[in-house]
Amino acid sequence: MQKLKVFLVLTGYQITWLACVFGENKINQPMLGIYIGSLYLVLYFYFSKNKLKFTKISFLIFLPGYLFDSIMVYFSIYEFNTSTKFGILPIWMIILWLSFSTLFDEILMFFRQYKILGIFLSLSIGPLTYYLGKPMGIIYIDNIFIFFVLMIIFWALLMVYYLEIILRKF
Image (cartoon, rainbow, N blue to C red; front, side, top):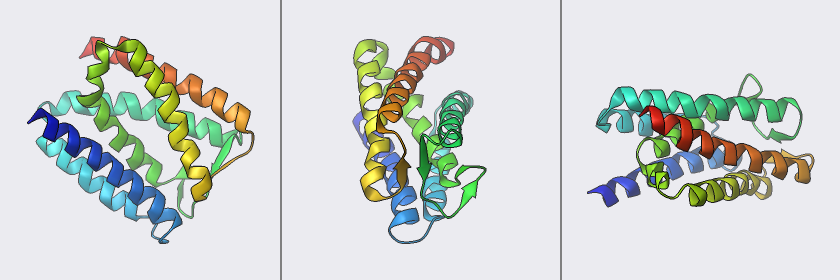
């Protein structure tokens, strides 16, 4: 059953990511990610064993992620090619960060025993995921070197924050 749950959560997040990116850039439906992601989050919340824990973890991951993206866009490190913004970010970034936080609720707890691996995967996969938006035309990167340095630092710190602070509270 645990493998099925991991598969469903990873699939739900990936479908949300695809709906956000392709909805905005390929099929001209910028709200598609909001609709798909909202449905995924409602289902995840409904089936969550500990709704309060999930809500807290979601907030603790969403807040630094959304803030980091806002700062990066504000300082023109990168810019999203979007038609619908909430502040300076695409509106779907709210749902995308909240959907991403579902991974931290139970799945990424695996890295509690493999901290170095978790940090390494975070600092490599996080920046690459953003960079994939460049050839897709969803993100414009002004300075690739600064982009990768800041992304690597952020994603490493996000995983350390999760492993050393969030998991200790829960």
